[in-house]
Length: 151
Image (cartoon, rainbow, N blue to C red; front, side, top):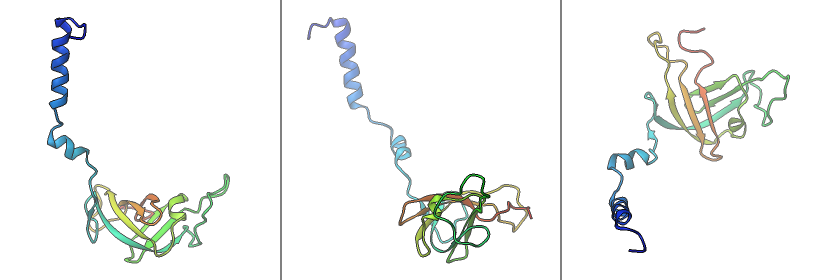
């Protein structure tokens, strides 16, 4: 018994046997597995994604988005992207991942939040996480500079 007394050997044997034969519950395995995005034409539910193609990248003033970060003390011109299907995303801040994207890049466009208590028909303020499929860069932005019910 490897020099162990019976008092220690039997509990150790039981622990070793139990830990070798135990497997995680099926639900735990499924929960731990990464979920593939749900691809749809137009995401309407959180977690749904669509594929898009970048048609335009600019700042808020319509100028080409700089690939370099904004210097301290300079007003941030923001970021804007429009897709070929006319969806848009905007941010009041410069975004590196978007700045390194190109017109024509394919992206995965996933709905991550929907504002609550919006007037009927006002869908502004939805937030999307977008992954550039060429660069793997990721940005998260609203679809409009205003929230629903705003200006």
